[in-house]
Image (cartoon, rainbow, N blue to C red; front, side):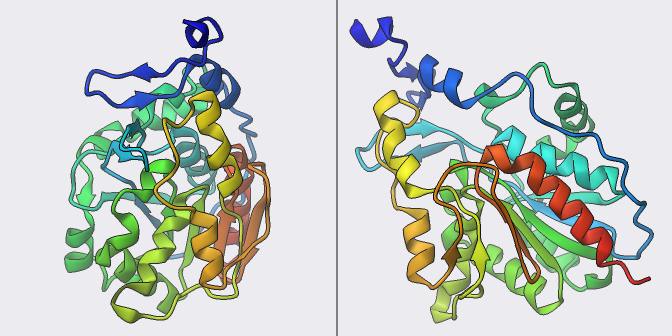
Length: 285
């Protein structure tokens, strides 16, 4: 009763999973974003495609057994895509098995026309994406068409992605062929896949911005998360000799060689700008 009065009572969805409390939504989401409209130089190179890997999973089991209703954070995914599209790049949308992309619709900025427009433009692709296996079987040889791999997500990135060998194949393909890899928030959990089958971690000694474990450990107190995370992402990456440059869930972004990362949903606009300008500047003059 007191929790309901203070707006920190958990909200249960029809499948029994939990979404953030009203106070958590008030603190962590907004109906509009900080998107900046920038007129970019037009990309005219041959490598104009960006592979975007989304999660198809919705519910994440916490340490206490409760399930968090998650998926892809709409701002983290769509805001950088707007900047990249404005720089004349286009997207190949995939999920691990080709099931529809799952978004955290409770975090969707309903009054943001820019985010709504690109969501509606790619809605069919989100509902009918290609599978990672299909991309590996049919497109992995077309290296000259692709300039980057973008891995957004949110807490949904923890769901099976670090154990997905196809994700590891894609990241190694991008690394070996001099493509950029773009990610933010919990998206860098995909980097853990590069250690599968006793491989060396692909990003040891790289600087990167990642969502802090300290914030994940705090949010159950206001019922953003219904329990502790399955593991601490920053801790795992640091144990593999990644250098995490941020300590807050803020607008921090980072460029290290061909890796572009951001700290949190708040960094989505900055990440989009950094990615767009970096990819444009990589174009041969």
